[in-house]
Length: 388
Image (tube, rainbow, N blue to C red; front, side, top):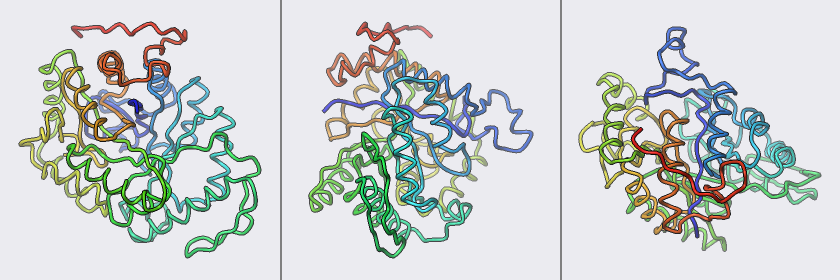
């Protein structure tokens, strides 16, 4: 099992800060210095960089705070050649038969470059913005049925389903997707585990300390075994990798210095209202305090002071970040979905610094080509620049 690397598309905006000051705020926020709007020109820069650096795919978020993932990535597919798109979507907001059809079309249009990230939703306020009023556990029940229909429809013959949330008669995708998109699925609650075990190809967790990640892996693996299935594992992390450890931690400190007490308190209050068990686990890593944010060697919880979802970053020299990836990999983590602020520059720091380290340790599939990301198809190694 080799390490498989993915990056992130900031479809809600980007910049040199952890605080959301993107293009969707009030008029004065749009003029904030250093804000990068999530237009196609900028997102294409990131997608092309990710492809050049050898990332397999880029994750695109879903929500009312960002651009639509399906439409944005379909556009970006025209700017790239090999890069896959890990499209996040919310079951229940569209018909499962329509979702199956959209995925099949996407695969043909992009020549097989679609991966799907299932987001059941852990925030009732956000769900209500979409007109969805189911509670947390019932959303997972619906997701279970939704994914059953999607997989059934992908068989290419009429499919019937009768459940509490969906009644489908003769569901059909005339031309099934080829290949069938892998399903990435996350969720830390008791309601989420069985759904992951039944449907996920890759169970994706946020970046907790290795001991906690191992507990999750053991939990999902045992549930999947009862279903007669095998699930692979992935982790979602930010990265701050530099030529030296001191440089990396100085960058983390700069991001922290940008946060005042009121901003942190407001963010923590908002995040504390989330129904997501995973979000509560993220909050528990730092307790809303700036103190002791390094919760495991090179694992920094500062991002989670003001941002929901993935709240931890790997911080250190290129070798140290590679050490932590190797540590998670030894637990069974195969997919690493990474990001950094700003996303364009941090992609290069990681791709030119950490990727050669991982390659030298035999953790990357050399034929899959982080090293061949120069667009020529050659296997020439990346040249690592220093002193930036």
